[in-house]
Image 1 (cartoon, protein in one colour):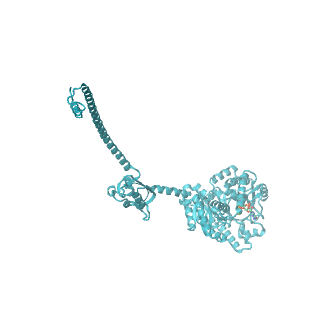
Image 2 (image 1 turned 135 degrees about the horizontal axis):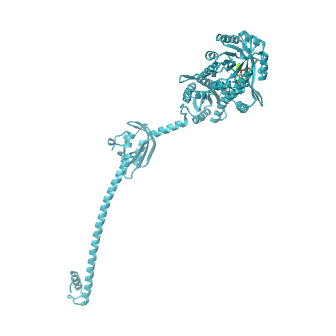
Amino acid sequence: MNASPWHRTLLRQMARTGLIPDDVTDERFAALLQRVSLSYDDADKQRYLHDRAFSLASQEMQDLYDRLQEASQSEATVQRDRLKAVFDTAATGLIVLEDNGQIFDLNPVAEMILGLDHDTQVAEPIGSVLVTADPEDPSTVDLQHAIATGENWRCSDVLLMTRTGTLSASLLFRPMASGGGVLAIEDITERKKAQAELIWRANHDSLTGLQNRASLVDQINRGLQRARRYGTSVAVLFIDLDRFKRVNDTLGHAAGDVLLVECARRIGSAIREVDTIARIGGDEFVVLCENLTTDSAARERDTREIATRIIKAVDEPFMLDGTPAYVEASIGITFSQGSPVGPDTLLRDADIALYEAKQSGGSALAFYDDSMIDRMQYALELERQLRRALPTDELWMAYQPILALDGDNVIGYEALARWNSPQGPIGPEEFIATAETAGLLNDLGRRLIRRSLHFLNDLPGDLRLFINMSPSQIAADGIIEWFDEALEDTGADPRRLVIEITETAALADFRIGQRLAEFQSRGIAIALDDFGSGHSSLSSLRTLPLNLIKLDRSFLNSTVDDPRAESLARMLCDLGHALGISIIAEGIEDDDQRRFAQDMGCQYGQGILLGPPTTADQALEHAARHV
Ligand code: C2E
Ligand code: MG
Ligand code: MG
């Protein structure tokens, strides 16, 4: 038999152990050995195949691994490049720190924020480039601690000192698992400025830079708290400019703005250091006076002093592009009382007092008291009634004769407004003031003047008509054109017309003089009414184009037994004569007064002795008898 080395080895082993004789001839063994041999061959083949397969597989694995290796290396490169790009272009400053706090890398924004140079800073300790402006500020120490302990850390606002100056920064530190970490740094200086600007805007008036209402309310609240704590009192002064609207309308808004800014400055310089000033509306200012005594007489005296200074400061003319403009301040004042009050109540009460101050004709101040509410309600009711009465016959004109004192010749009639309200007659001084504050006087005045012009047409001969106009009517837009039209419509002769203008501070308004001159150029005469009762008599004589003066009746009342008033009246008459202006004495009630007026040199007179105001029909009858 064809035995393989395996067979021989096996046979020897079997013979040695006595299992078979040395020379194997037995057919049974031959067949067994044949089967064993075949199995060996088979196993050999299998092993070869396995070896081959394994070596192939590991080769593949190796290739795969290499390929993977290559791939992951290029991926890492890509990742690193991407990271670098992000790092370099990040809008936030980024500083990579080692675990000992040294700078490993920093991006351009970080360099820019801190004013650093990249290469010279790498490897520098962070503490040497991040310097707080305040040496006591613990931020950098906290950061060092976070780096050392590998903790997250942030500081939303720190003032840093850099080579180029100081800046506000927000800092954020994130540790890395491998040690050290990244410090993000953001320059928030501009953002803080913008925030500060927003906060400023929310609390201030942008035109004047004064506090606004919201901020004033806070200030009053704080003032009240202090007053309670220290046993003092606060005053709220509500200031409103009279005739500001006219400046705005005639000289333009830009000029109005200049006036407001200047006004804010003047009010500011009239108050004390502890006081606060705010602008809470177009031409409304509020002054908060703190630290006042609770003694009512003393605090009223102190506050009156401040308010008077404000009124005087505002009274001075404002030069707007070379043109003088005039406004007046009215001031309403209220105090914090013993009982707790809030800013709203104080502002409301001061506003009510202001209303009262305004009623007394500008450049005035009023202290709040509870009765004002009733009066204000009455005034508002009067205003409502007046609006209703405007187009009705409740409003009519009375006419009072004016006579030459050297005989009994009537020279004309003064038209005086009357109101028969459902509640009874209301005097013109009251309803004209109401109409003026309610903005109704223009309308009311024009209606009444039109009626008077018809009356003038009915007056016989060359009798004249005297009409009253307040400065606000004279200064109103379009009044000259309106007059021209009314004169044409009614056919009234302007040369028989006299406009009486009351002497008030408003007369100082530069446009009044111009308007009066325009009336004069149409043949209308101008009379200064109530002369000697106001406060600018002499300057009006110099600046206004006047034809006549009506001497206030207070002179006739007092002069009889008051030598000083008498000499003053005489001087005023002399002055009039020297200027070529005729004088009409008002309020002649008895023969003594008539003689006295004549004695002083008044050519004309008016008063109940010479003839009371009557209806138009009665006046026309009166006129018919006297021409
Ligand atoms: P005024 O222009 O000075 O008018 C004279 C005032 O004195 C009138 O008062 C008149 O009734 C009054 N009076 C006349 N004689 C005497 C007298 O002998 N003794 C006394 N004590 N008073 C006398 P009235 O009618 O109450 O008018 C008051 C003021 O109202 C006027 O003063 C004038 O300033 C104003 N007013 C009247 N009507 C008008 C008007 O239509 N328009 C304007 N803007 N104001 C007017
Ligand atoms: Mg008059
Ligand atoms: Mg008068």
